[in-house]
Length: 168
Image 1 (cartoon, rainbow, N blue to C red):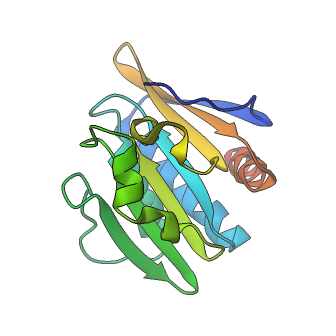
Image 2 (cartoon, rainbow, N blue to C red; image 1 turned 180 degrees about the vertical axis):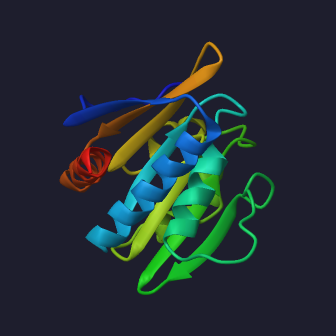
């Protein structure tokens, strides 16, 4: 299954030679989201073990989430509240049919004060709202790369924040 997304407004490719690089990317994304303060939709793609959940954990930690951060692989959804933002971490890996996401009632999670982080969005096919940012974690030999595609101005702002942070 693949996603049918338009041409991105902006693209950024980052090498992730070490697991710490994935954590750093997650931390910077969290700071970018808090800096913007208005929520958004982020798709996370990649093979099993590519680092999607690790990236989300680092993102949530940098936003102030404390305690255990569980993978939503079995529960499908984990919810966190930070200040006025809600963070919803979804994992559609176990979906067998795209309609399952509608039947689960997840459509109500998409609102202005929510950051919706979706692992395996391709399992819901074209039923999801367009992401602000799509992050594809790709194995490249012994390392990984992160390809970030922005589809909205909010996504462009995140990539610009990452670019500025990497220069400082």
